[in-house]
Each structure stands twice: as C-alpha cells, then as structure tokens.
Length: 338
Image (cartoon, rainbow, N blue to C red; front, side):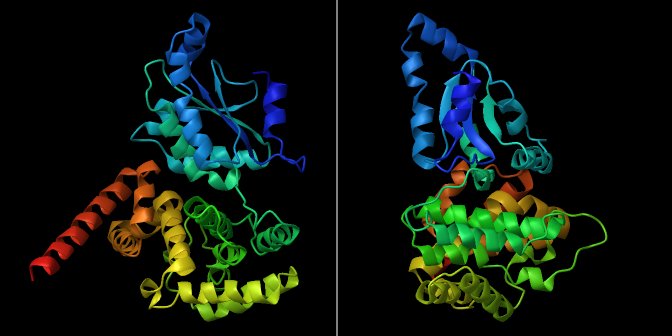
C-alpha cells in the first residue's frame, strides 16, 4: 500500500483527518506468505476483521513494512513489563499536531499482534473517535468545540480531565453502539465540576487530584453543563436528559439504577482503569489506589468487566484488580453460605 493510498483511506468525508489516520499491522512473514500463496496469508486477515468490528471508524491494513512517515510501535516494546505508559502517552499525543498512520510491528513469530493493536487503540481511542447516528450531527460537533473550550490543554490537570471525558464518551459507544445523544453528552460533561474545584499544583503531574471522581460536589457541575449545552443549541429535552444523567451518575443510589445511568457508570469506570489508573496511582500511592480500584470494580457490570480482557493494565493496577476481584468473590461466597 502506498503512502498516498493510506492517507486517502484515513481521510473522513469532511476532509479532516483524525490524529490516528489508520492502523497497520506489520510483519514481513505475511508478505512472504502472500508471495508464496500459503494459506496463512488468508488467516492473517482474521485480526483485521475482528478489529474492524470493534473500531469501525479506523482504517486497517496488513503490510510487510511500515508506511513512510508512520508512527511505529514495536509490539515487544509495548508489551514489555517495564514499559512506561506515560512515555507512550506523550508519543501518541504528538499525533494531535501531526496526524499519521499508526503501525504496530511484530516479530515473525508473533501471534498476538491483533491483541496488541486492540490494547493500543483502546488506550488511545480518543485519537480515532467513533460516532453514531445520534452524534454525527452538526449540534454535537458544536458541543465538542464548546467542551474543548472549557479546558486549558496547556495545563496537565485540565488535559487529563479532557482526555478522560473523551475516553468515557468513546467507552459509551464501545459498550452501546446505538447510544442516544443525551448519554453521549452526559459522558462528555459527567466530571465537568472538577474544572471548578482543582488548582494546578506547583509541579507538573498528569493525574488530577479530583480524578477519584466522587468527591467534588456535582451541584456545581450540572449547571455549567446545562449552560454549555444551551449555548450550543442542544434542544431543551435532550439537554435536560443529559443533565439528569450527570446528576444521577454522582448520586449515592446510582448502583440501583439501570439503563443509561449504568452505561455511563460502566464507561466512566472503564476509562479510569484503562486510561487514568497509572497516573492516579503515581499521584496518590498504593493504598488509596487499591481502595479506588476496589470501588470501581464493585460498580461495574459484567459487560464492562469483560472489556478488561483487552486493556493494557500496568502491573500494579492489575494486581489491585486481582485482589479486588478475589475479595468480591469471597464476600459473595460468604453471603451464599450465611
């Protein structure tokens, strides 16, 4: 595939390319198998089909060698136990200034290249955002601009809040591809109150103290969300439904509710574990992180928990999750035998 063709595939109908223009899976063995017409060339397409189903907005391609000017992630480097996710975040963040193809490069012996690509796209799904019929409308694009304007991305905390909001929105669509407009808007603004209750620390940190998510008063966030939605010409019924979802999301009786409230809770929890947990752990320490992970897991549905199989978790977060799952199972068994 030529670079010109790759760029053409990465262009959206609007003509503007997202930061991740497309994703390639690169292994020289595939090129050799295609040349020799071995059956493995056909089976190699399996990962692409699976990834296209999960990330329908992203162009995918098999290739022998990375495209010119693409951002290459070597599978071994991504999967290394000592891999620094913060460093990967900085590398991937550069795509916002220079959109390019992302190429995941594996060894000839690799059998996990598709899984690795899924982990990378899951952590950085905000850079290749999907929409559906409800959000592929002019008013939603106006809301995205208004939401972006609330965040000073030159500062670490507002940037972390902004990335979490976009990631939560994308998790809503991963879990419910036909989600309505109100819950998508609620995902963008569910933690907007943190912008009003945090100040920038003297040293740069990617983890806002408010990232724990349940401490800042929600009554300050809902009116701000309503004001922005009204200013973006969101109709009153949809805007009101979004604000009610935000309020219900922070209510202590939230676990008793289902539907879109549960969907928003799952998306928020998955975003914390898949994106925000390393920074939270670095900022708050092991004990507080263990408590946060346990609370997060306790409010997740089984549908959301299954998604963790495709998430790149740092070793300490994975350990906290395992301990939390074991404790939850133990408590459930005790209730059964009581």
